[in-house]
Length: 485
Ligand code: NAD
Image 1 (cartoon, helix red, strand yellow):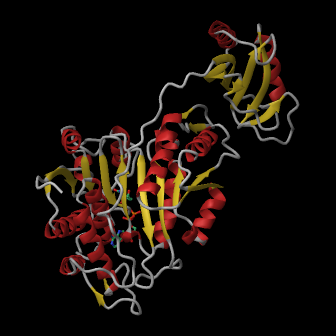
Image 2 (cartoon, protein in one colour; image 1 turned 180 degrees about the horizontal axis):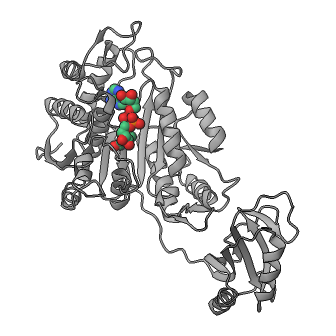
Image 3 (cartoon, protein in one colour; image 1 turned 60 degrees about the horizontal axis):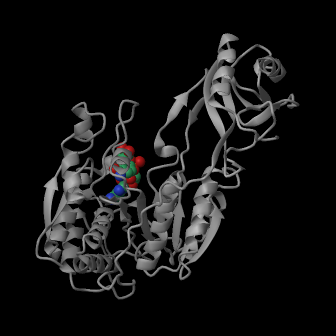
């Protein structure tokens, strides 16, 4: 370890944030961490100053300079005028990997799953969290789910590199590619391809619904689990709760240039200012930070002393139980107990060792793969409502307007309703109308043909609300079929 302090940025956040940050910094300082700390404001008081992003513009300079951010939880104001600071930070700084280790501390912390010791690696920037939402008609709203090849490559490779560097044996991919064959399909295909580069690590897959059920039922059988953003958000909270308390989880948000470390839990306004919060989540986040900045020895000292404190039954209120705890302490009491145990190892819980750990290779993605891309049609979405809502009525109108294109089908909420739909299918005011070349499916179509078709539709006073081009990539369709097609 170099004698030079490592610059880091901290933010004390809201609610219990300042209390747990002070406790954490006290532990790090006493353990001999060499840190040059810059503090920035984030969260409620910044939102109150009218900055809807929750962060001052000049604070970005500190984050870009130090590249390491230890952040307390913040209170996200409800209401549409505010942006989620966490999402903004993750996406602006490219923190693509959210790493959440979850461990059971049985029998010292009550849990239904004594053997649990897993890490969820959640993709952090993409999926439905791109935040691209629109209201398109009176009845219909949409949110765009974006899964990219480079994004999937980076997170999947990160999961395998993490497994290798941390002595983990297996990586499980959870997706819903039986329904979202293109988006989740890309994530899984990427996983299957990259898994071949890591023959020393086992790999398997589960559909997210049964996967979450198994995580909740038998979490001890999992090792490293990698998932797209939304599934990872939900599943990681399920798993953290199973460990006994949300107050015990730390997490890292890792990017190619910057990393942010935090507790999993929120600002806990119900106990703020009382001095009783459990600082463990942020402290474990800080341990991950110390490993990241190369202060592994300090990380090990802090983590083992913390384990010994739990084992000695010195517990904050959130995990205190008469049968498993010895002393109920407040935040300060817990902090003092950890500091008093530096140099000790837990006796029954597994101790941790970071000093011999392998340095992790940071993955980067291969950009610009060149596949042959051909335009073969267009989906035109219409806002159309007539009393009958009869798909045959709009279908016949569009057939008359098709010209050198051919109307292949109309779907409503993804279900084919024209031609030959079922009377029973419920129809909203949002119609997806698929046109291909009149010369036959798979024949190339020009942008001019699409523009001509849109002009005819506009002249017929039909309201087209969006278009999606249909492409073949290396001769294979890059679009899904209609349900029932
Ligand atoms: P929360 O995690 O703050 O609290 C849930 C429950 O757990 C509460 O009963 C709380 O007292 C308890 N708890 C949480 N952390 C604890 C700790 N360290 N010690 C003891 N008990 C603890 O979740 P919430 O109430 O849904 O959210 C409160 C606020 O936090 C919201 O504004 C939310 O948006 C925000 N939030 C922020 C982050 C973040 O900044 N990373 C994460 C989650 C929620």
